[in-house]
Image (tube, one colour):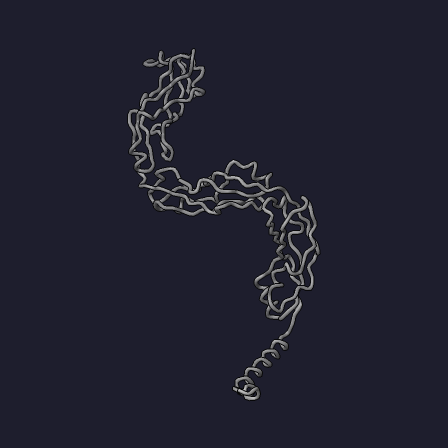
Length: 326
């Protein structure tokens, strides 16, 4: 096709496209421009040199910027917000001052938006060496399992260790890393629950993985009464023999079905604390609370009779005059 023919081929379509382009250009040129100052724009420092981290928050933590551009873009930015991201590829000294660049403002990446001013023009950074450690996770539990259920076993975390990277002064002093609080009151049945690692207060430390799975096993809660449990009274060496009245009591235990049903009464001990019965004189009578041991974790126990009467064995069967109570 001759050049002249190619020029006029589909000339109506080409003319329409040219007209549309001119129209759009005119619309853009006619759109009102604006200048707006944004205060308290957060400064975010991104350190790619993993052997260092911030020793303390950047100073200042926010800056003021003045933007120019199409009014609709400025309005959108006012609604969505922006930030100033400072890249740090290598650390030359523990303390440094960095001159801020306009292109680090997120809004500068938007077409038709310009950054006219960043104030203050510099920020101060303090660095310290960073370390990485494997630390065991420490679940934090709140509340109690409801709905007539109870914990039937230890809550298992997976993984049990997380890799924590952060400031040496903080990470080196840790023996574990806490999880965010987990509310047992929201648990109605056994399952796997995801909980985040809590890095609050660690000055930007990171944890990998950032979440941990908690395996929670619950069962129906039941109650069981253990009868004929002997009350032990022992004031220690060189002390008179003491006895309790009653000499045997009932213990009420509550917990998950498998734990309560499997409880061996022979493992349960009930006694009066020695410090409560020291120095008992002849004829003296004391009312003292009992203590219970031998109860497995996640099972609660209480005595049906919380107080017993303690006296010297030689005083049993007679009521001496002037007996005192305590």
